[in-house]
Amino acid sequence: MTSAQSTDDGVIRVACWNVEHNGLPGHTGGDGRRRQLAHDVLRAHRPHIVLRQELTLAHLDGERLLHEEGEQLGLTALMAPGNPESPNPTGVLFDPLLFALHARYTHVTNGWHPICNPVLTLRGESEATKPLSLASFHLCSYDPATRETEAKRLLTLGGHQRTALIGGDCNSYPHRTADESVPLPDWSRVEDPTHFEHRTIRTAAGRVSDTLADEVLASTKPGGGRVFVELGHYAATELRQPGALNATASLWRTDQGHRSRIDRMYCTPDLAPALLSLEVFADQAVAEVSDHALVIATFDRTAFRHALTSDPSAPGRPSSRDLP
Image 1 (cartoon, rainbow, N blue to C red):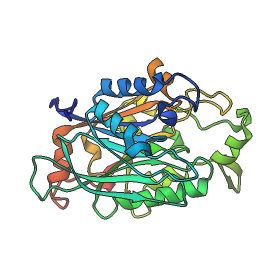
Image 2: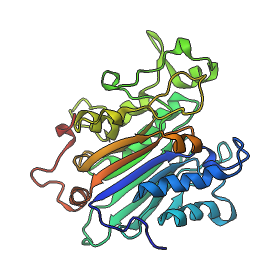
Image 3: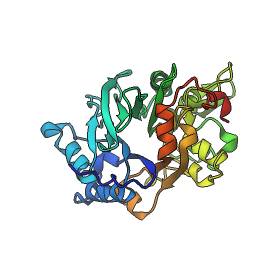
């Protein structure tokens, strides 16, 4: 397999995309064009890492659809198993010319979508290179308490000076609402009553939008530190890229209120300074493929490598206290 991303243009691109039911016909109609169009869209962005959700039926026939996607993109493809409740697995694809597979884990929480968690090392570096833990997640669509539990499980991937980069469909909302360009849903205008039950929590003030998962992952803790940095917020506030806060879903439905920013990526604080941009793509081709926008994070390759090779205790290494 030849990587289409092997040209060294000085960056590392990470894509995060929930391709609705893997672009397959029979789930939302169509003639099968959506799946090929999804491959074409991703290939045009030349990602080095892809965090995928809804790899529907990709476990069948020896994971044929999974490896077909990897071949189309020139990437090594891995996936977590599906389960009887939801046969829509998560997966991670990566450039084998840049990264080597160090370890591979699957995390199961409350019977919902298992988390695909490969751990990679950089090629061309010493054996002392710090591993990079990746995770593609699809938080529970129907229960805020389960989403909070899943977020706490993800939190362990970035703790204790580990370096991690994770992303997926959060099915819930950012917790720093004052910084967001897209407001939380106005539930009086949401026609779908099931959506209201699935996406709100009870408080003393009444029912409010669920922001628990983002708070678990990206809030500043009482001691002043944090485990993850949410890349959309970082790009908007530190890099002055307001488009990083654009809504991601739903691109199709109108009965669930306005579009919201529910697809997000997070990284540990040591990796955040390497970020160059966070972009949300919801153009015609993307909207034809899926009800979710495509999110692309672009990192400076030299800074990315530095985060994985420098001594975490060295002076000047960024910590969670240095970030907003």
